[in-house]
Image (cartoon, rainbow, N blue to C red; front, side, top):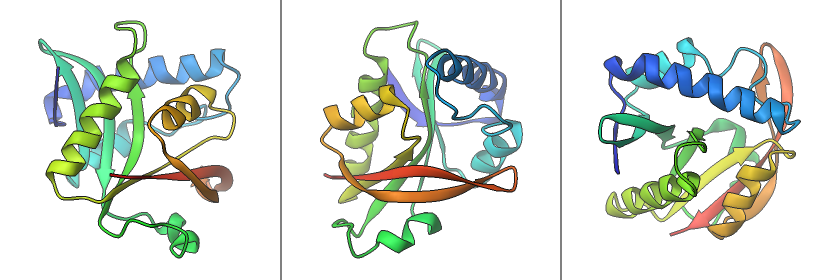
Length: 166
């Protein structure tokens, strides 16, 4: 399995992965990603900023995410974050039906990539009810930082953010 940059020709497979992730969250009773985002527009923006990444195995896309070097919604907690040269992980999703532990494999690849790029930490947020993501973050020793708000379809939505020192 390899982590690589998202390419335009990956779009249809990533959109299918979004549909799977949205349905999976709905089945888990999590009100995250149930509206319009993530969607083609977001993924296209992430392609344009070269932030998108995919986890691929033998030509099959098993995971998608995006890495940026800032996130304005986290600014209120800047004094609580310990890392200063970081990636923010966005839109993290893995097709859990394909391979057991795929989310862990994907996170391991992101951590290794961040270290290789000289980053000292990762930041990420999720819905409070997203027990799968929270379990993954706990497994990888992410530290709870605090609540944030994101905008979704013009409405503020509560999320919680975390940090992992690398």
